[in-house]
Image (tube, rainbow, N blue to C red):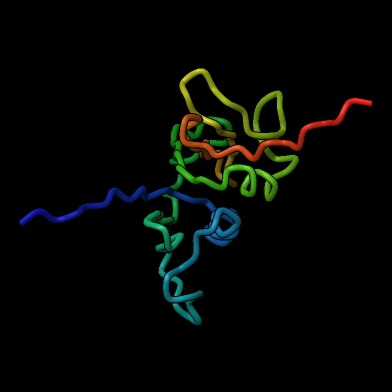
Length: 137
């Protein structure tokens, strides 16, 4: 019998609350809601669409400011909506998503620990709303 499988990233974090708040803006929540009095240094998050992310307390020395080697890619159709939530925080020369030469419409962010987070969707699969034609006078 074939079974489906998932791949889930486990990211170290220097501040679980700050990391959880950042990823909540991308639609990730604890499946059972916030823990009341239980905080074991490990957070399991899901976006309800098949995306999963685990956050764990970083061991001292794992995350050096400006030298975080970790990165994530979130495939999401609502790229523009997500980018609007991070106005002013998008990395790069342009503060909005762009079509990239590798065929993705995307933007990049840095999470509270400097993890590179790219959010995008294949350019060829995008449905772009056409602007109404301008009438000439």
